[in-house]
Picture 1 (cartoon, rainbow, N blue to C red):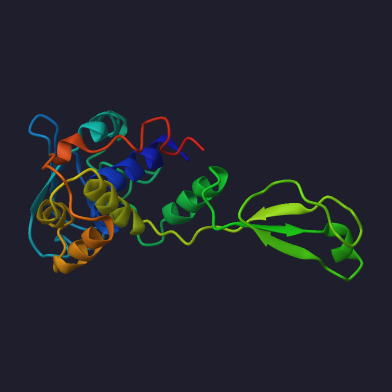
Picture 2 (cartoon, rainbow, N blue to C red; picture 1 turned 90 degrees about the vertical axis):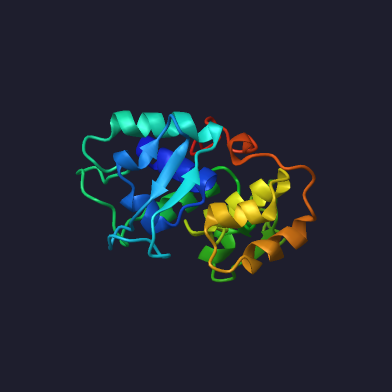
Length: 218
């Protein structure tokens, strides 16, 4: 994963922005001093899904990623394509993210295949949760473990943001405001799964579950 993609993914995880909002971010939307990220537009229109400008608090762990993006981006856009233009719906970031998850071993399991039996026309395969060495019960050959990719979209990082915030004890109403859910029930349903939070930490004290080393390092 490129440095630019890593910064974008970090922003998706820590700020809970939608894909179009991430692509539409400009440098002037970032206020490091006030720890605010202004969400004003999408990649295909000059407004957000909610049709209004909204401020999202910047988590402490996100600050270095944004500072790097501000210094690295050549133009007005915060996360441009390599040619400097705005990213579009055709951007392959979701595929890149799934590949990174695969390399990190975050998958739905492994399909263990016997290549010898497949060549003979009598394929043998087994599905397991790990990639431990196994041998074919038919011919004794070592099975080839193939990762089964997890179905994960860039939009799913918003769910990750909500889960981490709620698990850290952030108030569900605050989480709903951060994610800008049109219906707070979406956040509340997730909160019921995790249980009622204890205390009222702020968003800037976001749990350091996703560190600079772990994001995109696979």
